[in-house]
Length: 388
Image (cartoon, rainbow, N blue to C red):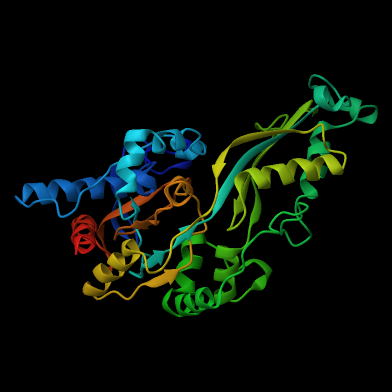
């Protein structure tokens, strides 16, 4: 995937689309820009690895099928059409699996091997006087609040039903199909909690405590195995400087719902609509923006074992994680009809995906973190490990 989320230049210390190399205190020299780590930097490292093999006069160790798309950030609505194209599907069926280039190191040098990803539903909820049949059909003076209903409060009241007092999902039936962690996955989490640094995670996120005041180990299980309901944005009426006494006729909430196996995109969307209708919010427009199902890859897949081989040869003992809490359209490969293993790989560190000042480290100040050449070399080593 090579597309990116939006960027507000006012929020960045470096222009988001200039890809400037800057000094980042505590990290070293980084390339900063939208897509630096998600996903253009790691993809550039992978392509550089292919050029390096050819440039060294070596034969490519394995056959490679390259599939690219530019719609991941809107839920990959057409990617399945690409993957199911007869020529593409025939090539993919011959493969041992699918890898997406990544930057798998924490800033302290720790590495995680990932066996899947959560799914996601992106959706807008829109309340308006027109569809509700109550409140104004245009923005009006706020004095009219005494005699008119508020679409904005109508939306807020609907949103409040989607989670409980602790912020956990309360959509009827949502998460009912969620598969609990197996004994093996619990052991993975036990080991990961020992290997990965809680302090590093908190520093990257700028947080002091985990939800429900959970321990580091339990927060990892919550992170990877719990479905979520999140408000990405909430907009109604005047949001500029100063006050403006207006009663908005329309309010919009942008949500994402994260899914775990065995939940599905279609099932989650249907549950959301039914939940709202049952509580008298059936007038609120539910406008899907895209998404996809969760993925799973077995630990013994050649794709994963080659990753472990490369990392251990480099003196790195990774944390094996049941999945990432983020989402990508791996389900087009792991689901029917291909049913291929899929995962991420690549050394190097970057962060800030979807946020201001996204970066990918080029010359790290920590010698445990791979520099640009090391990130490229990790892909070369991975391809040769897969070949053997």
